[in-house]
Length: 315
Ligand SMILES: O=C(O)c1cc(=O)[nH]c(=O)n1[C@@H]1O[C@H](COP(=O)(O)O)[C@@H](O)[C@H]1O
Image (cartoon, rainbow, N blue to C red; front, side, top):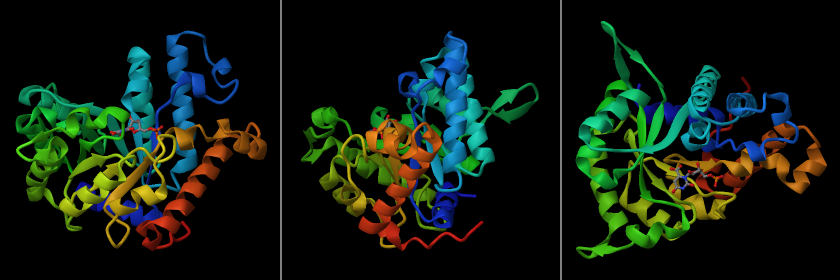
């Protein structure tokens, strides 16, 4: 089934477009969490796996999709990568769509290898087997068409999705992305090209398998890009810790509350570190995460078209 159709169905089923970002940092794990694991690199990697699984347990009934930031797992070497794979599979087993945030790209043949690694199948003896088997991957389009086409081809074949960086959420985003060339900002050129790449790959919902990453921290550009990119699903990071609000992300949605998923990583998974949550939930870190997800659901429902998503039925 087409990625955008699977995503839209999942968003409607749970009634919210939240993407929970799982970006585990050992220093931010709940108090005494790390003490239960051996004090070496494999031990820390195992703590990331157990923490990630614990987050998944809480959020699986509430949200459609999770995004794993590969960097925090890669930091712990082969064991860290194995932890990422294990938690990603665990999440899929719980019915969540899994996005790997790796921002991959390279020359065509290498891009094809990345695409097969994360979204497709790799040759094993006489046959082909899935490797990472993620549902979606973030990619960097700034190498041009031949760096993106291999990802799109593999994603189309496998029913997977892609989100390409268009307007990022970070402070220096404008350093290159806002430079004017041929009368337009670079990010606008990227958006225009992305629309061409995406056009042949629309699902029944009208949305393409190729989406755009647009930061919540630049609401004017977000609104502009929504208007110029109909049918392109957005991944919107920057809500919460980076300062983006529900009002800032409101322009990302279509009139049905579809067309965008709003990522929140630290604001949800480290909710227990906030004094108010500590006072309310004590050492119950999973309850604090659950409370934060419910707050975000309510905030988006009140201030954006996500409020129009149907109320989820009791499972
Ligand atoms: O591709 C991304 O997800 C991404 C793009 C971008 O422009 N800004 C951005 O913050 N991200 C990622 O989104 C997550 C944001 O995390 P929080 O700021 O903790 O919610 C991190 O995993 C970032 O790497």
